[in-house]
Every structure is written in C-alpha cells, then in structure tokens.
Amino acid sequence: MRTPMSATGICSNGGDIPARADAGQSVVLRVNTRLPARTLAGPHPRHPFAVCRGFTLLELLVVLLIIGIIVSFASLSVGQHASRALQDEAKRIHSLLRLAGEESVLQGRELAMQFNPEGYLFVTLEGADWVPVEKDRLLRERELPPDLTLSLVLEDVEVDLHDSENPPRIFVLSSGEMTPFALELGNLEGEAYTLQGNFTGKLTLARTGEADDDRW
Image 1 (cartoon, helix red, strand yellow):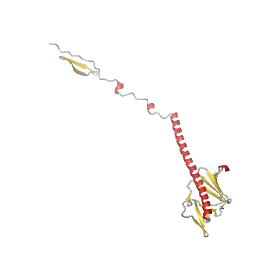
Image 2: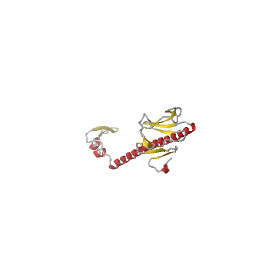
Image 3: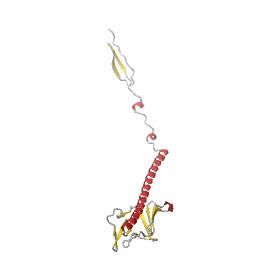
Image 4: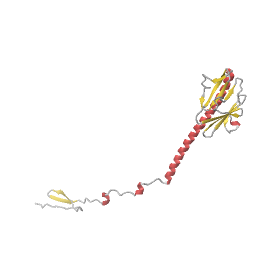
C-alpha cells in the first residue's frame, strides 16, 4: 500500500489550497495572492496639469479668427441688405414720379406727390382741393422703411416735411411741367441717392456724389 504524499506550494500570505494530484495523493498548494502595490492601488494617476490643461495661444488665436470671420460676414450681409433697400426705394420713387407724369398728361388731370414724415402719397386736384388718389394701387400712399431718411428741396428751398398745414408737394401737371426739386434718400449706413426733376419733367437718379455719367 502506497503512502499518501502531500505537496506544499510557496504562498506569501500563507493560504493553503488543498488539491488532488492523482489517486491516492493529497497535494496542498500555497498560492501567492498578494498583488503588487501599484496594481491594487489602480493605475498611476496622471499629472494634474495634463488633466486640467488650458487652451494654448494658437488655439485661442484660431477661435478669435473664426469669430472675426463670422462677424465680418454678418456685417457684410446687413450692409448689403441696407444698401439694397435704399436703392430699391430710390428707384421706386423715381418710377412712380415718371408714371404720375405720364398719367397726368394722358388723363388730363393735375397730380402731385405729397410728403410727410412717415412717407409719401399722390394727390389729385378736385375743384379747389387736393385729395388722395383712390383706386390706384401704384399711386397709393406708402411708408418709408424706418431706417431710411428723406430730405426735399423745392425750387432751391429746403422744405419742412413736418408741415401738416402746408404739406410739401411736387406738382406734376397735365401740361407736362413739374416742380423743380431735389430729393435725397439716405440710410443709417451713410449711403444716399439723389433724385432730381426739372421744369420740363425730366428726372435723373444717381448715388449721391457720383458723376453725371452714372445717373439713371
């Protein structure tokens, strides 16, 4: 009969784990379960400056550059919109005065473009009174956009647009004659257009300060 044998493994914490080697043999293994201190404590912490690192100068410059580009495009868009609105309104007044001159001659009636602080309208002479033109969607009353300003010179005299008792008028007569005038329309960006009319009814429109060759 064979004598039972036992085996013991080295274990730093002294823990014994019995195990079967084979039939008739008993083996005790000592298993080293102690882990290195670094392993038990978890991964080595990173340097605090590596975790809380701020932006570099280059990154800040890139951000500022992007912001500057966005602001520039926004300003350009707003400026283009303001310029377009001013140009459209100047062309509209020019076209309406030309239309009024044609209608006055063809229909044999006296018309006038009348101004107020908010905008303008067309009036016609009925008896001794000037009354608003009715049932004409083109010569109807119109308001100026709030960011546009208007000044008017009639026969070399600047007029007050706030005069409600004697509102300023550009007379457009059936004879083809017109009150000589200079109308300047501007915006908050400092741009302006000047529309001029002479006694014979000739109209010219140009950006204020441009040469005569650029007139419309």
